[in-house]
Amino acid sequence: MRLLLDTHIFYWSFYNPEKLSNKAISTIMQAEAVFVSSASIWETAIKVRLGKMDGSPAQLAAEIEASGFQELPVWSRHALLVADLPMHHSDPFDRLLIAQAMSEPLHLLTADAQLKPYSDLVICV
Image 1: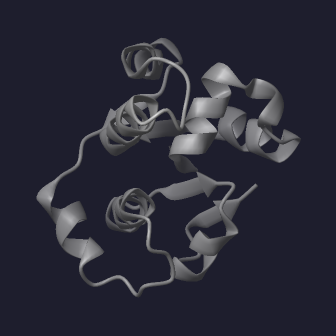
Image 2 (image 1 turned 30 degrees about the vertical axis):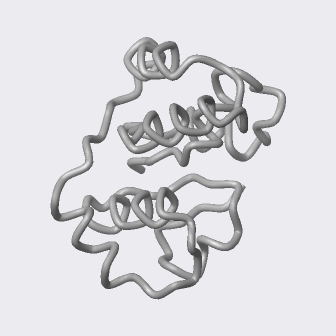
């Protein structure tokens, strides 16, 4: 299975691994490839700047490769798919991650149950 980690799952894997469930850890460990979207670094940078998250976006970006994960750039095909998604969720970053997962295709590993209605590719942990 090829995975795309949502922002919180990736953030927790680096800053708060105790927040990851056993299912999340097991799913990541068993994946043939694990991706982190460049949008997750963008989202983290914004939230750190606004004081909603702690940490360093630069450290998180470096952690992608150091963890053996792969960075997934945001392509125009991802952005275009966002326009066609139903409004199950209003967060623009989550909608972009869904679009990336659907277009690649990748399984999106998330703790956000609101994303499940989008696709069978969503794995809630």
